[in-house]
Length: 364
Image 1: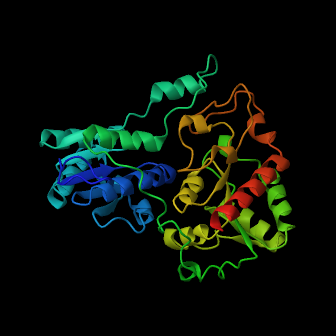
Image 2 (image 1 turned 45 degrees about the vertical axis):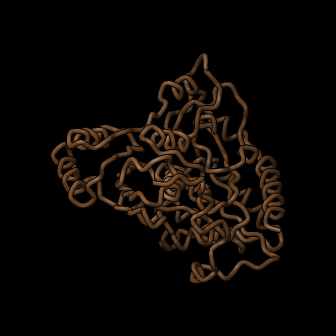
């Protein structure tokens, strides 16, 4: 293959299989890297295999990328994985396999492909570094390489080199209003749209909801501001419904399922998002939306900052015990979640105002 500025030095493979299952945020983080690799290597065919529920997240994908969503439970155990191997071998017949997950399931799949003559590389998750960063004593409190850098590194090891070409799933500009017209009217010039995602999977990541309501109340008093509240699950829907009823400029997005395309299109038209260290931060990053991210038990040093998000917009406290967890799933060793409870309304609002000002300047 002839060399170009953004392409690999040579066409080593014709068909490359990629896998990443797990949580939605982890899957969303693959998109900037996978799209960039595909765009830099247009003569190579790629297939992304992921969870069925996340397959629709790969919006406006490059022409040389096929996305296949599967239900993991349909391929249970070694026998099920062997059946998946045979199906993928028959359907796509890859000559390389890039494993962006590196768990027992994907490793076993990698063994099957290796035995069939397929080149296999898997991600190095940097578990030792993450342990040193989160252990109770003698922390090595230094930033680790990001998950996206780890994704890129796997492609590099298998032979692909490329620049970061991805900007947004909508091409670097807000999506057309028609894509979310059934949710809300078009964004007017004198309006400020704020997306708010107050939930996360684990308690160690969630800013206390009574304090988050104070943030929503504060924003509701600002003329021209609109708030879009994101969440899922019955309990979250109930909370957001109460806030929607209480604050006239707040709209719950949890009342019905709109799908990734419509919700991401709306997000691309927002001015900023307030989010926990959660999947919503990564979804906002896919549409180039600046995020005021709130961090408690976890820390940007672990490598999970949103794609091209400014760390100056990370609201967090510098206390000795942080971070205590990579995923926020461990009980607070202090017992009081000081890392979250002591974050003030003023810290969040100052960061939000600075983020909005910068967003306006960039869009002028």
